[in-house]
Amino acid sequence: MTEKTNLESLYNSNLKPKLSKLDKERIEVAEKVKKFIAVSIIPIAISFYLTLTIGNELPLLAGIGLCVWFYFAKINPFWQAYRAKFKEQVIKEIITFIDNRFSYSPTKKMSLSEFKKSGIFLMGVDRYRGDDYIEGKIDSTHVEFSEVHAEYRTRDSKGRTSYHTIFKGLLFSADFNKHFNVKTYVLTDVAEKMFGFLGTKLQKMNKWRGELVKLEDVEFEKEFAIYSGDQIESRYILSPSLMERILSFRQKTKKRIQMSFVDSRLYVTVPYRKNLFEPKLFGDIVDFKNIEEYHNDLNLVLDLIKTLKLNTRIWTKK
Amino acid sequence: MNNILWIGLGLAVIFTVMYNSLINKKNQVENAFGGMDAQLKKRYDLIPNLVKSVKGYMEHEAKTLTEITTLRTKALSSNISDDDKVALDNALTSKLGGIMVAVENYPDLKASENFNQLQRSLNEVEEQISASRRAYNATITSYNNSVEMFPTNLLAGMLNMQRKNVFEIPETQRENVDVGDLLNN
Image (cartoon, rainbow over the protein chains, first blue to last red):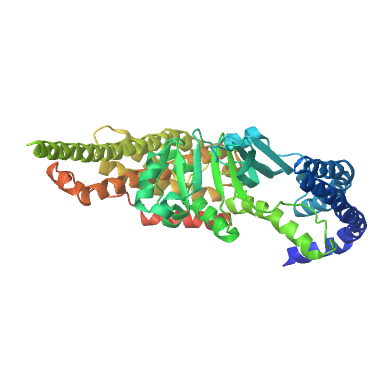
């Protein structure tokens, strides 16, 4: 509750004036986009008419191409400039408010090699994008995360390519508080939920990530399938209390989180449908509710560090 | 004639699969016990160091320290049964827990870097021991399921394989964990 009142006072003192200024820019950009849409109807209508009369699709394609080119050359730069400003002024402020040990780079992302290293998704990545990279050291725990979007490509019989999502959401990585040598994966349990006992049999045959580990926490087992190169070490990492914490995070956020323990780091993926930390183009931005939403999305990650108690340093790793 | 041959062959295959799975599970249990043993040894290796570094400070706990050393020597001697090993290990765990609580009364000791490192190592080993116990219990459960469930229970009966007991964590130890959690919060 106090957190909310603090955020409200930050909103009133710092963010509101900035947002009012930014809102003017947003309206300008929105006007441009509206005008563009209104004007581009004309060339498209003409080219459509030509296409119908000639019986050739070339004019329509040219018309659409012209409009797209015009948008990217003349309209998009304004939107990008506004977006960058918004992130620099608003999102950064919220991040600093949450914890001033975090640094924020709006255009940077978690690298593809980190994504691959996490080993949570085995499928080959053909296109990888992302932004909103946040990094920081909370006491002894180094933490980094960003929004990422990994996709694979398919070609149909006509040679058209299309991209399909492997993962979209937050990729989070933190220094883990225990030493370990092998890789351990905590994945969403699809097979067991759908096929029960037979699902377990199927999972056992899957040796890609090592052996299937059956843990004693029944609730945890229902949600997750665990694979590891070492039965004992996976249990050393996933102590009963950690399992409980992961489970409570899973239940609280209702997100299908997956994690891996690789090279002394913890990787977590939190899927999201929406694009995170993006400004609106249409609709008033001077609204506390928006700010609260950004804040809650960011706080979720911080909550993860707290919930998992990664700062508990009672083992030999300091 | 042909049918009988196929049925016989089918039965032989089923028998082999069941037999192999049972033996596999039995070996996994032994392997897991070995894993636990390895973790326990790690703790035994830490004990002389621990005793040496706290002896000078803890006059009141001299008796407990001697007991710990005796327990260690006993546990390391070669001619003890698995059950004895487990019992000795439980005794050792509770004694060590006692020492770690008593440390709170010796600020000098608590502040020493050497002891701090030892304590961290000990925490780590304790957690690893508990992990190996849980791994052991998981293999036992899987083994017991095979021994008691149809149809592998028939074969297990013929091979005279019996249900094994899971490793029970003593009541005192559970309490210790709770106290530790309370202190952390």
